[in-house]
Image 1: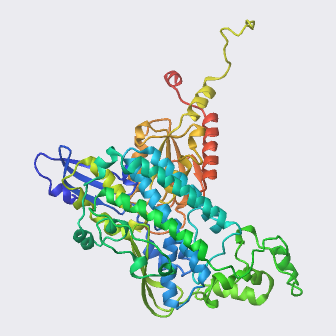
Image 2 (image 1 turned 135 degrees about the vertical axis):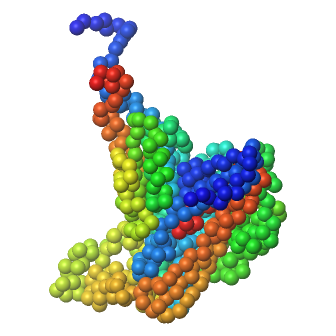
Image 3 (image 1 turned 30 degrees about the vertical axis):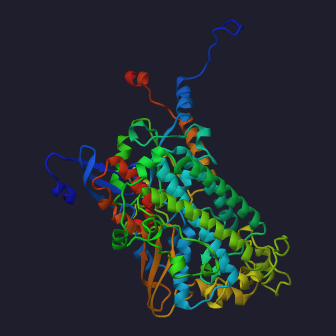
Length: 442
Length: 164
């Protein structure tokens, strides 16, 4: 089979292959170039190297089991993907989430957004030759992941946002960790501003390279930082506020020219806004419904089960450290909708009703069964509007699920953007688009 | 055998094989074949916080011709598989392969039409790292295990080859 670019190739030009095993293609995209000297005459993008059959596999998984697959869509900010999926389901089920849990979601979402932007810019700067910036930004991400790990138990793929709320409450000392993460990220952002924002080499490679007009961006379906860099003021958090974003004070940074540098700058400023939002949430978050109680008292789960065989055990159980923050007393503050949430482990281990509830939740054909119908819900993801479209036929598995991946639309414009530029300009252009393979190919 | 003990003109007694292994295990040039989520943890482990360079394997080469160790980081789909095979074939001997993360080890949670169920169906693997994605400590542990393997295994060198 001949590719389009081979069929259209002109006399005297050279065809060059870039990727998929190319460091700047992030391993999953292939760009075929038709070159006249160093100028790109024509370009064809081939993707699908990371097609893992997400949408198909979802049709055979229950709504609860599907959560882990959403983690691995945009793997730089899994918590935003969780939120998008779960909120689409909540819209279908008509669940109102407790306020504390909404704040927890916003804090984790905004930190995820910072991680996403940090990673995108780190890769972009490294590919332009600024390796120090890469190291600095990864350092900041580690401090954020410390908080993620402390709260969710995992560094990246957390599956933390659940239908009805979140999996567990924050640990007792989350405020200190959060403050450290904010301070360290601010320091890194200041350093990186100093290193990059007025750097002549960086400016030469990014200023007025791959300029996008607002019309072109909208025609391609761009959203997120890339669209805002062209000056279009569209952000799902402002346009269609979800969670508690309407109660927070934040600005939407806009670019002017829509070139690579603006895409860099918008991301830099958005991170600052995200950190501002986290600080506001820390001050506003409602108190937990029960105080922290990790004093280590109570029965071991195994002891509780054997004790409950003869009579009701008089005392509560000691949850494993992995389940800290999921105590039954905390459920009213972080979870809503009794029917659709995982029953508390205390009940599962100690009484028969709890055990039956547990089985009823996880059994095939039971659990979360939304009514027949369709739903679309979108959140502001790291690289744009992340939408979930679910069709339900009333069973515990979706009839069809479609993901509106933001970077699919953004990367589609690459061919047009790099035409007429140099080969070296492809690297920062592709970097500034923040291509995420899992989301692009699904 | 008598020798002077004044420290001048000293010598070491070892077998050439273990010396070669010692040299090779601390100068691993890696080729990260990054496709998916595990790449994020790879970035963490290669950066300042966990710092692979402490163990003599921090040098990343993006051409297979200069690399000794192929890190297959992330999901390998059927579309990607020929690329991986080509990269492996282009690497020069001696070479080692690390399957990084559940997808590379066994296909992980993606048991479907698109994903290769473990890269050992295409290329030989030396070390398997479980986890989805593995933690940085796990990765470091696995790579130290690979170093131990390199130390112990029999190495081919030019002199030996000519004899055979």
